[in-house]
Length: 302
Image (cartoon, rainbow, N blue to C red; front, side, top):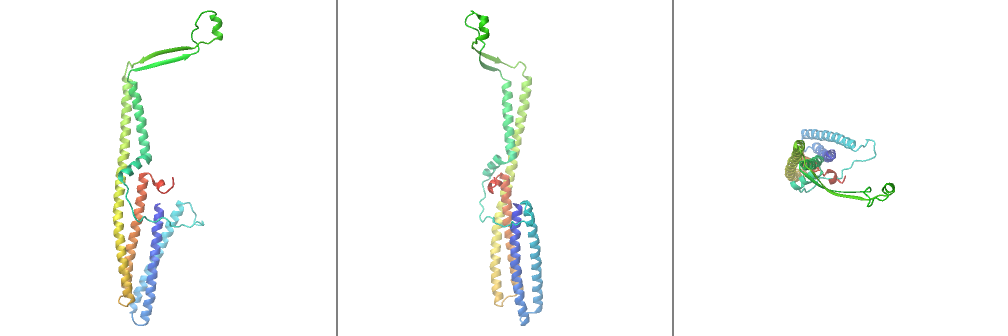
């Protein structure tokens, strides 16, 4: 999932840099016409040429990073470079994020995380063992019922003959009382069992505390990223408006290509920061779902 979001980010970065290069190349073409007509100094055109080269270099670098991200994603999916399968970005960052309740997340984690399930099973086993040893230290009174097919005959005539070819049902009812004469052994077993039970309780409490801390930290990170994303979106929107105004002034001959590209660079930086924050937010959500133990269920992979 982390590799997917890295691929998503780099795809949009490359798209952004292509657009930036196209704008710079268009303005360079216009500046050449202005230099030819004597409306612009040649030094300004040379500076524009340098900016175009810098944007082209940035685009090549972004494409290389995208290729590396694509290779990593294909490795995770066991796809070869010669495969006919095309990687396509479908999932997009969530537009609105509703942070879940911390207690609900903890309940889900305690019922789904392997370490929590193992610790709970250990507590149940030690509790049953402790109850058993507690019973061994107490007196015991049992009701005994039995039945068999070798009871006594009702009369003695032909007893030797009947013993081989007759069966007589017998029944017995009684009480059996047991009490330990030396309780040291049972008491020692009970004491050891109680210590193991206490240790199991501490283990599950430790697992719970660890999950509480992890969930609290991840929720705090999500809250911070959500606020940061709102700020980045506001900055990007403001910069887009300023870039549009500067382009209109340039078209009217009231601004320079340098001013337009500076505004465009600020806009691209803001958009990049917005994309980066969106991806960081999605990765933080993946981490939270993993901690909750619902990562497979959330993505429909159970």
